[in-house]
Length: 114
Length: 112
Image (cartoon, rainbow over all chains, first blue to last red; front, top):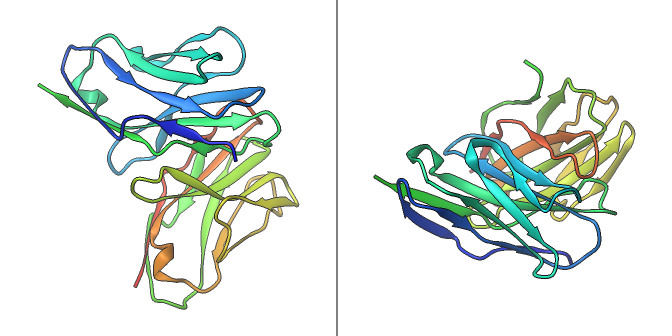
């Protein structure tokens, strides 16, 4: 079965330092890759998506992700963390033949310290 | 505002009761789906639909029914609630594979 693995369940950073949230997916053709963010007791908001165009994808709020096919990875980064970035982040994959069904990673909780 | 609307936001059920979670979208999206969110497990797909009259099972369909009589609505029915169905439920819609989904704000369900 196709799967998505977020390598860290919790990441803690200081405000102003870089953020790295790691994601790997099982190999298959034509993946569409997404990162969603969920603030406490809120719904999910799309941060960015990769759909076979440029491998470096820019999203909202200064986040970026790079699609690396050889490593089957789609890590999320931000150069400088802000307190408002504290949330849970989900790496999500949709495969070409899956009719839009999404497979979620387990989530990474990002804590930002002052 | 355009988007995905879920009702109710909160619900408490007794074991064995039935209920319907409502989901409506006004973006004319073909694809709609239901997910449940449990701590440490991300979101798991319950049922999905690729258009009016077409539905299929996801990863965790047992105990749930769906139908899609219109493009706009995709209700989720719990047939006989069990404590294991205590969860947060999200409805989502999309124009198609690779486009990303728009999520509703969720329904927090507790079964006692």
